[in-house]
Length: 376
Ligand code: 5GP
Ligand code: ZN
Image (cartoon, rainbow, N blue to C red; front, side, top):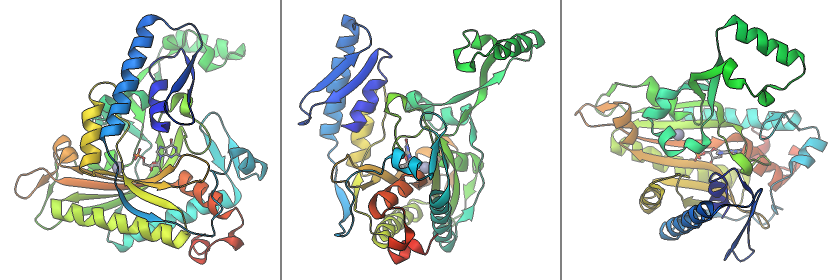
């Protein structure tokens, strides 16, 4: 339901609030202004299509963990974490972390990186910017235009820069400047929504020799516009993600797909996190999302590691994505026999992992399971 809600917000700026009923049989939609007939018709159509896709894409559970001692009612609130001076909001969906929060993010990331290195992964440092042409090549812009975050360059024109300076001197905020487009223009870059696109870009036009697939790892900040769904640490505009990426022959990639499942399972076991690994689908938008969702879920190409809360919707802390030869074709990653390479990645959303750990075990490491305390 959270996913459906999130998608509906993107249909029109005039939607103020979407409230599903407790039994999920109806949805109340509150508008800022009276909606016109065409909008109501288009909403009706989108709701039907989304429900149909969710209904048809039956989800299966790969594993489930339940621990007795956890007190995981719902995600820890940002107010509680702010009161403890562990986070500070720097705008909607953007946070700074301090104290035990930053220690846990760093400790967790180091732990994950060491797991990747123990599997012989090569580590990379990727930029937070990604060229928009890479986002087009990867299919991101086509499939998720509603989440993209293009960036702007200033116009190189002294007069326009002077007048911007003047407006700022007069105390106007940049987002309120009506003539913003006069000062800035779209650049060739966007803020990167994931880690692995950089990896395919890095290996573009490569040939993987026989039995020589590649495992890589990197961590970077990722950016997705979440619109009105932005909130808490669950829906951030900027979040940190560590990814492991396997590329090569189908057998090599499937071996790592299984390995990634085992890694996720062991982490939840060690950290005593209530969770399920379930087949899922990406939030495809606009045209053909039904078919894509059903394909992804049906073939279990996307698996989501969901933390379970007693009184809140479950939350994906990781996902394992088997892309088959999709990126191999998009980025011309070839095998020795000329076929396109396969790829699979696992992403760990570090902010959500930390929030889940605090929600489950509290913020005092002395009360954490031993395996968890060891990583900080
Ligand atoms: P995916 O690429 O499957 O959408 O996301 C991979 C992982 O990134 C998710 O499992 C989650 O941990 C993290 N992630 C995705 N979107 C958000 C978000 O809006 N906020 C936060 N905190 N993490 C996110
Ligand atoms: Zn990825």
